[in-house]
Length: 216
Ligand code: SAM
Image (cartoon, rainbow, N blue to C red; front, top):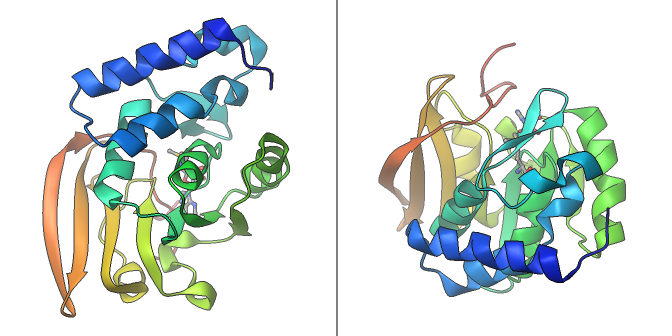
């Protein structure tokens, strides 16, 4: 369902209000959440779930992240228009749309071929055009590095060194790290060649697979 209407826009505004109450303060991020039609990522019968602050299954055992998590990670990335951003875990493509609304140039990589094929066709039909890649994002995207910002939208066992290597000076990596069930969100800033880390409360993502992720 690609159409938008008054009722759906109203639900989106309510979601923005809820995210504000939960502590999201970045106005550009809130505006982006208010603009991107999340319901288009849901089947018609499930559309009532689109503007609840919940993660939701998108097939292939994967999820569209919870709006609060998308807003939180976007805020911690401190996106400036023109930033070159790598997203690891394209999934539904919703987070990529938010990054594009924030004015970033977005490179997004997905491990699951079926999801990659689906999203690569679908997002441009909505008017969103990131650069799509299929492969193991735990190794980053060396052919396009460096990046100002890197966001990982799957839970990692450790911070993959490939990702901090592919971050430019002054750049920020936002990544959930922990065990398979729960992770802390890390905001890692490259400053004077050093990595300065901040850690935020618990999140729960599907596992990051691949060479520097979980096995199997
Ligand atoms: N950002 C997505 C969205 O907006 O819908 C949510 C992503 S979902 C929580 C996590 C995604 O990471 C899944 O689609 C999964 O296939 C993908 N993934 C897992 N390991 C990966 C890897 N090594 N490289 C790229 N993608 C990976």
